[in-house]
Image 1 (tube, helix red, strand yellow):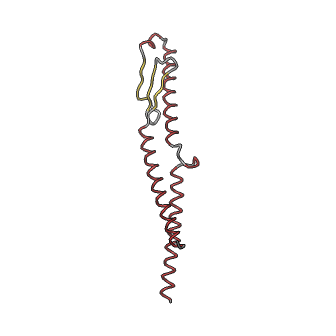
Image 2 (cartoon, one colour; image 1 turned 60 degrees about the vertical axis):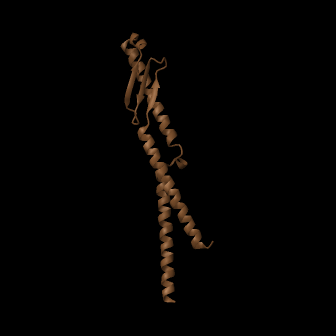
Image 3 (tube, one colour; image 1 turned 180 degrees about the horizontal axis):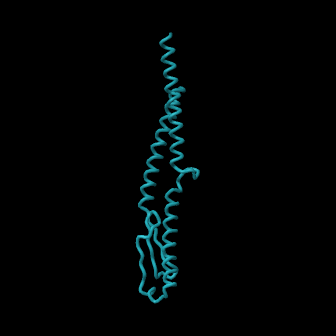
Length: 137
């Protein structure tokens, strides 16, 4: 394999890696938007579900909880909501755990794209130089 073929192979590899990175980023973003978290208080009398933004979307209070005073019930609700938010956060972190070096897939994609641009520019300039030289000869 000559130098030109090697450069083209490397360029092709960068394109494929960038395409893969974009697919992974798109899937992660879609999954993050659909993510919900669920949690309950320690005694299980209150359960909550939150959306991808951590906002409360569902709250369930068992009849047993109605025997509690308002301050205790408030505490139980807050505990369940906090557990749901922690669950949502844990799931979100797990979804993006594949990001390279913790820098983020988008950053990696942008680096790959810059490398691709530089390799393409170098290859194009080299081909133009060869064409100019062949015209002179």
